[in-house]
Length: 88
Picture 1 (tube, helix red, strand yellow):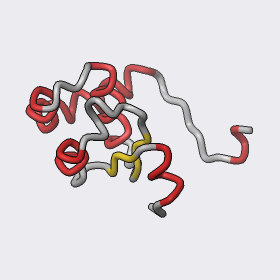
Picture 2 (cartoon, rainbow, N blue to C red):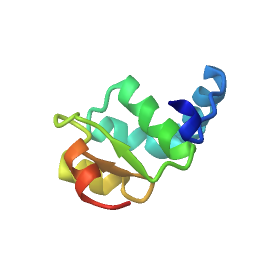
Picture 3 (cartoon, rainbow, N blue to C red):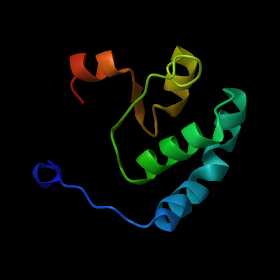
């Protein structure tokens, strides 16, 4: 299945380095929206890797309108339904 996608898997350290680079910029948003460390790492990594869309089911934090707007300059946060209904 992976052969049909352009997937490259890098060592974890490279992903964590990308997240660390984005931390100063994202730190205030993380605190403001009470985003957990794992969610923060996923967002920072996806943004750092150039992903246009981040799909999540986290309605408590990431899918709140104010949170989505705050991250919109970095990455488009969507629910699974929004990801299927709205082209990227």
